[in-house]
Image 1: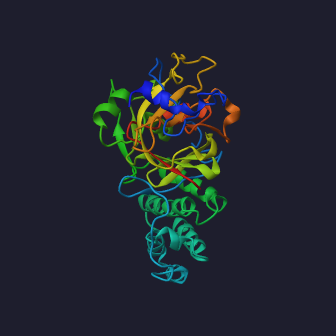
Image 2: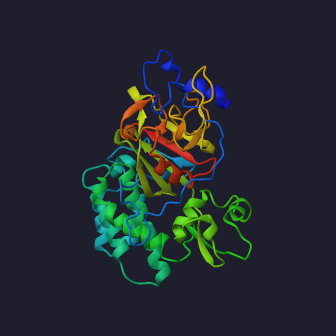
Image 3: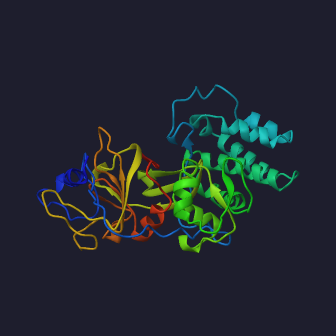
Length: 366
């Protein structure tokens, strides 16, 4: 759907002026945005060693193996399969890795059984603390442990407070340890004349499924023009986004593991659609078209889209929705829009640089 039509649909319920423009989307349509001039967003700087990667709000969930974040799925009867006793038995036998593998293979409903999630958590912590092997083996154990802790958090098997601190430490160990991690990070030698844009578009095309901001964040580089001739670590796993409506937050996942979250504003009366969506448009400095009206340029007080627009690909049930900034920071954490997901402008500028067309966004009710 064209941007003009998407914009008309987005605020269709506002036709009688019932609501003030706060940056949302209407039923069946979100705010429309048009391309404007300007550069991409700011790279995320929080979460480097010495700061908490999850310092502000918490952690996010795990994606489905076949292409996107997922919520609770159909699972066997709680009586089927191994449970807490089996996990703890493996731990008592010194088989921490097997205990973690067993817990990671359980369906979400099993993880929520009384006693099972604490046993799985203990298995992850035991594996992370286990000795032996060289640096590469320790990093591999840390990676397995953090994936299990992340899954417990995203499936609501344990409160976030029980895993946040350790997950943060394991993320630092894996992502900022300066080592290649198979399937997670690969090493690339930057050569004279290389630019981050050229690397993203050519040499890493098809292999890197995240925006340049994530590359900068992992390597502690403050801006794309500060790239130097030196080895850098590059993420192989895709970035995915998870919006939890019940918590008014957005989780940034790198592969299966959360690395950052942001508070968000949502649609009034449950109008933010649920499901899995795909980012199709990335627009800095977006213009705005109100229903039946003229273009409202970027920066105008009547433009509710803030500094960035990340538009979703239309689906049969949801057209014109997306993620964007806001002209009303006080609306973050509230249900005031017609459906789009809103972030503070500074947050959406950071998130903008971590995503690419094709990034998946899951929106959950809880």
